[in-house]
Length: 608
View 1 (cartoon, helix red, strand yellow):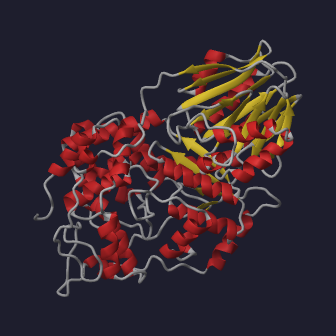
View 2 (cartoon, helix red, strand yellow; view 1 turned 45 degrees about the vertical axis):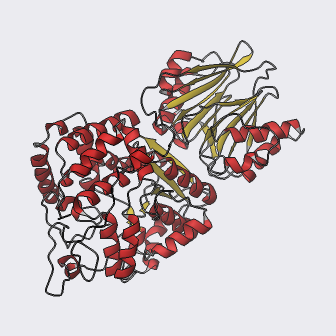
View 3 (cartoon, rainbow, N blue to C red; view 1 turned 90 degrees about the horizontal axis):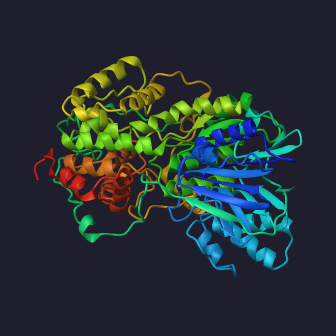
């Protein structure tokens, strides 16, 4: 997924305006970039595996009347970059085509590259070979391809540029005699465009200078970071991941074991977590939410709410409810901090395409984020402490910060969250010797007093491994500030008004949206999160349980499943996920064998 942008001018583009387009598109990803522009009556393509700002400074294409480009996150592998070229056609594409292999089987032209976006150019190439009309290309692409399609297709031999989208992540505007396009409206507002409109239901055909000469291409590759190799199963590595169900005393009502922090059992074997549990999945009448959102509704096709969107099952089902039940017109917002997997991105693409919903991406500096995680993981490995596992996921808390940015950029105040009310764990802070607060009603704890206690305990643990005192600290602390201390306005939680039912959620996503499951686990929970498999392996290896045990226990207490069902489920869900763990350590540049050997050697909290 990426940010795409472009300018078409009578003579030469305006440097200042184009730089603003590029700067804004950069927030959607800076792993790779590309530019297309006219020089000496021939279209030149420059592709790089680094930041688009750096590429623009090198190319300086301001003499050209046509310049377009992209700033991209690495998705679906590293094999090829955009713009994608086949013969005398090229495309820049924001999104992921999730059925490209299937579409290629329907085409007569052969596949050349690994990148999913090539299939868009392949369709156009075949249609032009069959003398079909240029104007019919967008409809054909959108009818065959599944997933987000927001595309600029360049046809120099025909002197045409096609702009089309199936989810609205593409806007076009005018300034004087120039035409601009970008993935977000805000980029065009920055340069004061007029007549800005969303490209969604109808494609746009623009005239550009024609050229009969082939593209010239320059590829610039220098990346040393974020090179995650394709997964290859290694039986010797996989065998290092140990899985044995320990003989632990468990609550006779739920499935929490004796190693759960602060757990106590009564004479009947029922734990204090069960005794103190108050139903969390007991929603208010949904009519109340309809009344609450009514003042935010906007006329016509104007967007009226922001949906923080991770691509996980709860945010995906929440989006389904917002569009189909609340009848709102949302824009989704995704924060990519370097641990969103391609599976998660593909499910984002599926949902937004099918529901016709724009997706705004804010991408962190992936190299810096992963470097922060690596530093903290190295510190943790020197002094393993279950209470410090949260340091490995601290970087994602800026998710809460950028909601406010998106509100300002879009002018939309209302944000609707799909947070699962049953995801309360307690043990993650419990291992820091912080007792559970059974009165806390939120999934995430708030307030100064609780946070001060938490940080005091964590600081004490950090002293045991000085490596935690590194350059990631500011990122960690500021992220937690935005999550726990900043005032939240104009927001509601969907599952305060809709009962969360796993069977309904899974059935809806799998059957109505062809939602993709992971190959290395039976659960649909946290499968797009690159961190979950690793930290759950650590918890299980040392303490004999994971967050699956706490989640299933909450379901038992809510009357959704039986204890026998929960035991069967966790027996499967707690199995090590080799593929996901391998991806995680490869992303961090950490040696799988060394890391897992350290984890396996940590003293257990139970007798083996």
